[in-house]
Length: 353
Image (cartoon, rainbow, N blue to C red; front, side, top):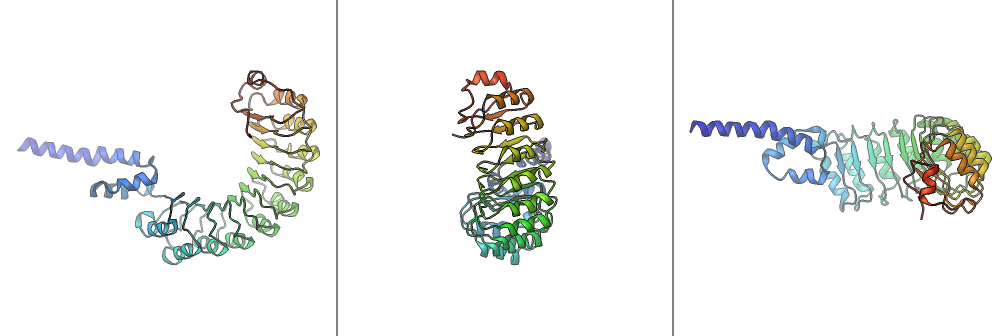
């Protein structure tokens, strides 16, 4: 009997110490859905997992149905009181009314929220953004990709309620105008990342507001915005910390404008796809100044030749890992092996298809 008791005590110690330590490590690496399934295994495991605040900092409802109701249910649980990240990307069943209920019923639950992903939540409008941001004073990252319902009022609510935004994704928010960009520029001068892909109502003036005041930008995505001109493109040179720049489809960008952009000598990723006015002169200026380039797409530019490729091989061969010159009819067709002789670190030869 005594030996049995000793064995039971050892088993209990093993369970409490070893298993608990293992679960603490493993649980931080599990998807949230698996983590929630583990809660159902046993009362002991439930108590063990719930006692670790660090594993309940995320609510991931990406692509889930009834996401609005699920969010309300999750935020009503004590274990989510310190949640820092909420992902509702492409979820279904989340509307303004759900975010307004979050505000009225769970207003304390989001006091630590830092990251909110509302990508593809097309039933959310300005009023929903007003409700959710009013209880997220520590929000730093917000993504509202592909939402045609939000307007400049969304930006007005955001800058009023959340003063610490450093990453803002408005890609596909086609109703945002220069006024919205002025609000962003005046309120978020420490902004590090901005994506205004396909925000077609923004003009040079709106972009200039940002370029003059948001000098800390490291990432700027201007994909599929053909209306900008060199008036704005030249001022990208003000962004001394810029690492990522997407100018795909910048039909009005000239070699002169690209020459100013070359002053951003910390650039690591540059997308010039379909920048049809660019020639060797502009690319050579980039090659001579931006010697840390890792990604460069010249796809579809008919005005470039082998001259720019040779310049790039002299200055960027040690860094370039992605180079797309497909559709550049002035550049000699080379095999993969020939390109590797010029750029030994290349691993991607085609960005677009």
